[in-house]
Image (cartoon, rainbow, N blue to C red; front, side, top):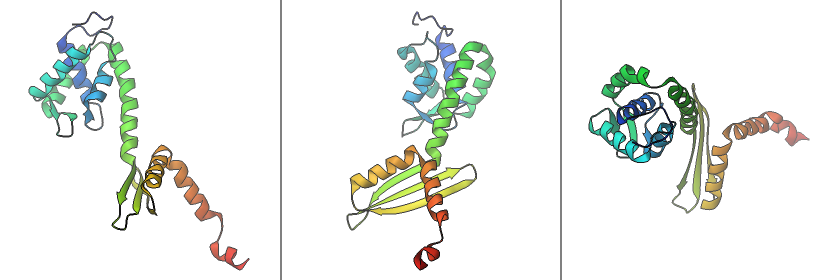
Length: 183
C-alpha cells in the first residue's frame, strides 16, 4: 500500500470506496472516471486501485460492459450499503462533492445531443436536441454542405444549447413575418 497521508489504509477500504462511488453515479462510467473519483484520498495509488477494481468485477460486485463502462450490481449495492459507514467521514464528504460534479456532467451529456451524419448526396445533416427532465425541449435538423461546418455547428451547440434555444425563440417571437412583408 502506498505511504500517502490519506485516510484509506488498505485494499478493502479502497473496494468500499469504489462501491460507494459506483452506487451513487447516475449511469455506468469508464475506468478513468472511476479512477478520478476514487483518488479523492491521498493514500490511494493507481496499482492498488486497478487491482481492487478488477477484483470487484471478478467477484460480481461491478460489471464491465463491452464499451468499457463500470456499473454496480445488486450484490455490490447491498455490500456498499453495509460498508459505507466504515469509510472516513472526510473521505465521504470529498467523494460526495466530486460525485455531484460528475453526475451534473453526466446528466448534461445525456440532455444535449449533437450528431453529424453524411447524406447520400455528399452533404451533411446536423441533428441537435435538447432535453430536460420532462422530455424534449428542442429537436432541430439542419442540412449543411461541408463536414467541417457540420462538426463546428454540433460543437457550438453542445457548448451552449440554452443560448441557441433562446436565440431561436427570440427570432421566432420578434416579429410577425406577414407584417414585415407588407411594409
